[in-house]
Image 1 (cartoon, helix red, strand yellow):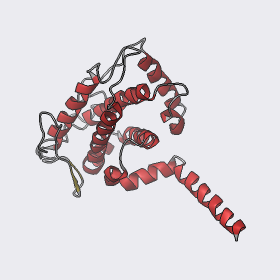
Image 2 (cartoon, rainbow, N blue to C red):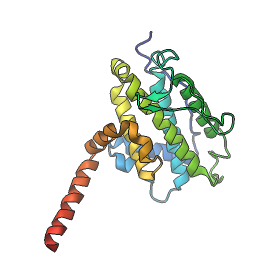
Image 3 (cartoon, rainbow, N blue to C red):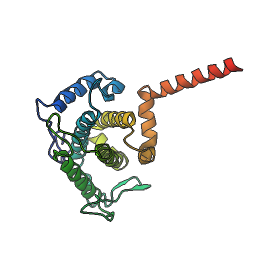
Image 4 (spheres, rainbow, N blue to C red):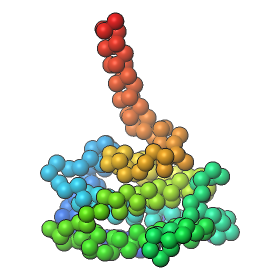
Length: 233
């Protein structure tokens, strides 16, 4: 068993062509992410198209999760993970609405393989994720992105609930936490995933957001409200 699959990827990495608008946005995203300010890193850059920004970040998170999951494929097997789940309480069945309309109960590796292949199909389709500047995005693009992010979250949830001890063994926990924190800031910024879908990692999300200053902001706002109430009284 290979304990150091640092550069492993589950599926081929999706690359954004150089010289395109999305490539420019990708470089901007990398620069702002390097500043350590996640709120700035996820915010739509001034004057930029929302769909372009969603597209760039969808590719980025696909690549991140693809790489993270690639490090634990020796542990996540059909035998050890006979169903796609996030602990004992949450179970996910596969359906894509086209080739599989009735949800199937499949193993975690099978589910994730189907998921990444399904996402890759969108990313490689110029009618959905146009690579040429000026080409239009489909009218349902936001819904496609939301569905992708909802399902990508499930991979994070599975890794945290079922494989975190192995991730610690591999020394990848800091990378996983940083990636997931970035993911949560992004989905919250653009309301991409319903709160009920995030329930399997609710406590972790609250912890990560509090560390990121979200909790302090909330406390500050509550104090301001209390002061206003006191003034009224």
